[in-house]
Length: 455
Image (cartoon, rainbow, N blue to C red; front, side, top):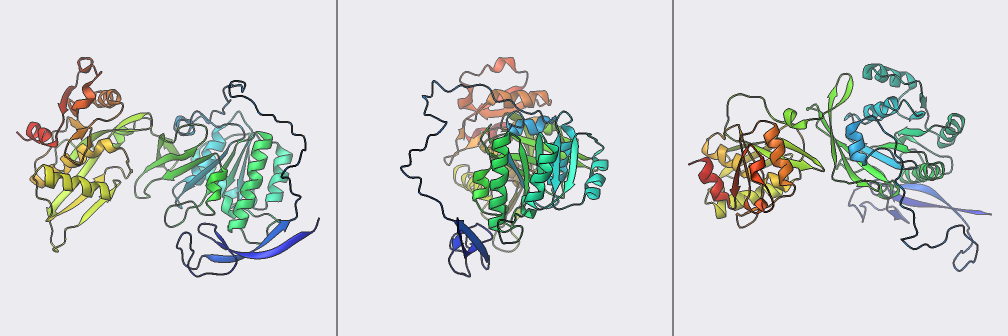
């Protein structure tokens, strides 16, 4: 069967194809990102209307068996939580993150902790000796973990055939190349073809495959967008290199929830799981400081308390500055507008800086109330008592809207020794406050919180 060869131009940022070179990508807007690649298309017969017999037949949904999928225990509570219970046989998992954040350390720890399974760790970025040094630092050994440094797909499948592993780890997908594509490693065509081959292998052999992927300067996974569609699970490894905390989030998961979050602490011996993040995310200072408020937040199924820090000062350069770390800047501007319009606090001529302690990013709208209280505390220079915490979403009319799973938030605050918690009044329906030892304040408007705190 004759093969027809042609060349096309591909955007290295988003993977869109063009018949000619263009300076600016019409899809993602990136400049000078198009490179020429050889595309090989083989002639195929038209299968439309063919009557070839297939082994599968359509079934009613009631006839399909719903047996529970067996999962591999990774020996990591945090990773199991994010994956939805463990590694599913035949799944393709992609882990992305910034350089130096700890992706390779996480993947090697997974491989070394799976002592009951044969694991093949394929590295295209490091030699076997470098991986050995990292393994010594992690202080873990596994006789069933096999290490190989390889970038050619044909050689990798040869190693897989010889070792017959239960789990395969690839570090990283951008370093692999196959002879079928006439372009360099990391190109759109190579990433797409190599991922396709690994996906076919994972599904046919029921072997979980973990891929490590690079990210671009804007934080998205490098390579074509189809890469994220092909894999079963996309995990994002986040964190600030100036902080010791690392957060593992799931942005796509065909076998579990995408709302879960795992927290790790980077140490010289590798990544340590953080079972109680609240104690790490709260400062241990004895004295009360203005501009600090504690919020009862929830990520996935896990409640934890976080510290909101705010600084309000007079604008020195005419135009007031607005800056936030770990919190959506547009939402902060909305909350400041609510304070100005509904509560009568003049902040239009003030600089406002907001920070979520610990270097983490929080998307839970229930921390709105703590943000407003922290800003007001800094503006008036009045400290909030350390035994008080808050939870509640703020509406545009200044009302405090109800939040989900309020009993878990109150229970977490009580467990950590807090004496008072402010919750939305509408959350009181069906909630038995008497079972909690902590004092619960039911509030419906922002002004009520100010009257109780600053009376």
